[in-house]
Length: 443
Image 1 (tube, rainbow, N blue to C red):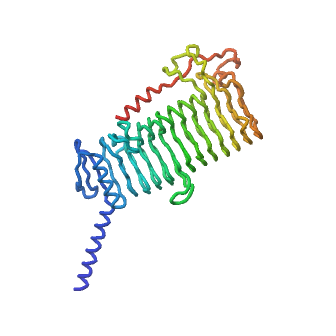
Image 2: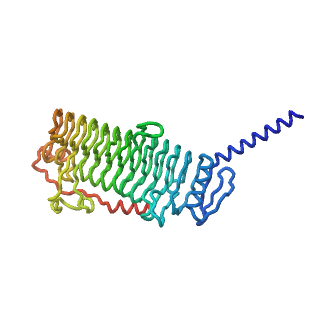
Image 3: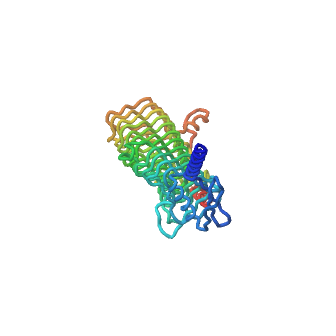
C-alpha cells in the first residue's frame, strides 16, 4: 500500500514538473480579428488577452516571455499599428508571415527605435516587415551590447536614421537576408563593435545576403572590427554604398554588388586590415574605391565599372553628351589611394562604358602613400594614365591600359582604330522611381 502511494506521489510530482516546464517554455500567437488583437497560447489555444492597442498587446506578450526566460511570439499576417518601442529580452524569437506581417510604427513622442534588444543574448527576429509611418521613430531595430542575435528575412523601411543599428560591443550576431530601404542616414549601421565586451575583445559579426536600396548610405561601419560583409546588393543609395571609418579594422567585403550609387561605391577612412575581393562596383558618381589613411589591405579580383558617372537625372538613354552641360563635372578614379601603406592592388578590371564620361585615372596613388603593390590590373577608358603612382617604395607593373576608346567599341570597329569613335548617348538613373517603390513598400 505504501509503495502504491509513493508511486502516486512521484507520478503527481512528475506531472507538476512537466506542467511547469511546459508553462516555462510557452509560445504565443498574436493575430487580428478586425482591429482587435488577440494573444493566445500556441499549444493550448487558450486566449489570454484581447486588446485594441496592438503595441500594448505585443508588449504584454513580450513581458510574459521575459518572465519565462524566453520563448517564441508568432505574429500572424496583418497590419499592426504600434505607438511605442518594443523591448525584446533574452532568448526570445519574434517570427511573422514575411511581408504579410507589417509592424507600422508611429507616435506623438520622439523615440530612438521601434524594436530594442539591449543586453539580451540569443534573440531572433525573423519574417516581419518593420515600417515607419512618421518621423518620430528614428531607427527600425537597435541591437545593443547583445550576443548571438539573428536578424533574418526582415524588411526595414523608411526610418529617419538607421534601418538596423548594431552597437556597443554586440557580438557573434548576424544580419542576414534582409531588405533595407529608404533609411535616411544608413540602412545598416555597425557602431562600436570592438573590445571591452562582456565575453572578451574583438568578437566577430556577419552582414550577409542583404538587399539594400535608397536612403542614405548602404552599410556604414564606425569603430567596429571583425565584420564579414558578404553577398550584399546595394542599389541607388544617396551616399557611399559601403563606408568603413573610424578604425573599423579587419573587415572583409566579398561577393557584393553596388549599382547606381551617388558618391563613392566604397569609402575607407582611418581603417586598417581591409580585404575587398570578388565584388562588382558599378555605375557610381564618385570613385569606385577610395582609401584614406589606411594600412594593410588587399583589393583583388574586383570589377570597378563606370567610375565617375555623370547623372543628368533624366530617363536613361534619353539625352546625348552634346545636350548635357557637364563642364563642372569632376572626373573620378577607379581606385584612389591617399596616405595608404602596405596595400596589394591586383587582378582588378577597371573600366567605363562609352555611355558615361572617362575616368581620370584607373588607379591613383598620392605622394603620402608608401610601399604598395599595384600589379596586373586591366584598365580601360580613362583621361590621363591607367596608373598614377606617387608613393614611396611602391611597386607597379604588368598593368594594361587603353584610354581612348572602350574595348567593346574597339572590338566592333573593323580597322580597330579610334578614328571612328565618338560617344553619343549618356546613361542616367532615376532616383524618383526608387523613391516611389519605397513609398509603395511602406504602405
